[in-house]
Image: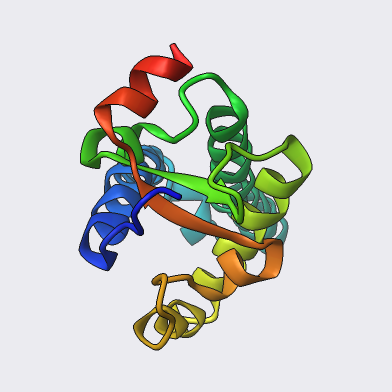
Length: 153
């Protein structure tokens, strides 16, 4: 069975994965002129602008879930952040998991983030450093050894 991944690597991988999404959202949100309609004199212009902005800020959550799910079920077996730090999510038997399990795990991961990260704290008390979203789908994150990475290619 693969070795469990240290928590510091897990958080670094998440950081690497979400930074590009956050930067994109900030860049679009700060485009010159994009805030003008927020200060328009009529309420309908302000409302329309807020609806567009709200929709744009909601899509990164779904984009991340799809991104992570697709890479975790691919031959790579992990997101780019996890690949950089040398870890990968696996099922209870140490195998790459299916699309449904990957989708539910990543959806639950974002729910954890929206709950101010408190479900991540469970990993501090679990022998295998599993978070709430890992426990929900019967998974854990393992160190990706060189031989395992080469075997999947």
